[in-house]
Length: 313
Image (cartoon, rainbow, N blue to C red; front, top):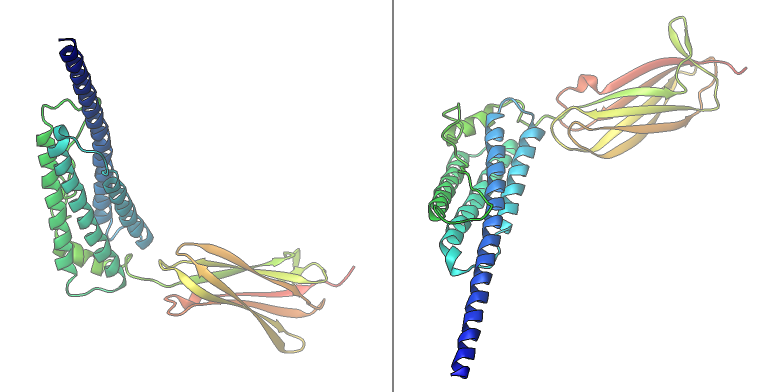
């Protein structure tokens, strides 16, 4: 009798421990699932924002939205590597399906739309449609998840509807594949634009002028700083910057060259030309030129300045 009682107590303890473990595992799952749903909702916001911004936003902004969408969807899907117990099996299966299908759809859309920024192809609309279909399938799987946990105690967590393809948007064609394709192809701001500009600055700076010509103070050597800006929407590599110093008295010129390895869209950097031995009282023309291939606005690639250096003393 005593042996049976001890066995029963051990069995009861084992049951209670097992039940406590299952409850704790379920609670941890719902906390994770809440984070997954939140990240996918944020990714869906990025998709809506990207599609609504076509024709308005700059190319870097559009690409950044797609990158954030990808990052959030990828992070969400990576959270679902959790333990599964029978009480959460159905919920786990439905949200895992939703997340993986969503991620596949996000991958499809990001790759297609990013590729279209470089060159359009006949299959773009079909690939966008495939991505949207995957997102709709993920939306349906998430609705199944919500119905699965209806009436279930999920602890302190709460779950709101999540949809990548939304029906409550003002633009009824926002998620239409053909419309998206046409809008991307016809958007001036999303098309690649190559354009750099340059401006210069002397060190020392002019302290006055002589007959309207800037006058530099006397110094052993002069420095010219070239400030180069990428006004386009593409990364520029191998930007050539040249300084030509023309001596008006000798009618000769000397050219100095520097190269900027990389200049991101919207970025600026400076290049210095140091130790220029200008002769006092001579007239010089300083010319800076920044050069890239396929520059769409070459008229802002050059900076000119005529100077005289003051005599010593």
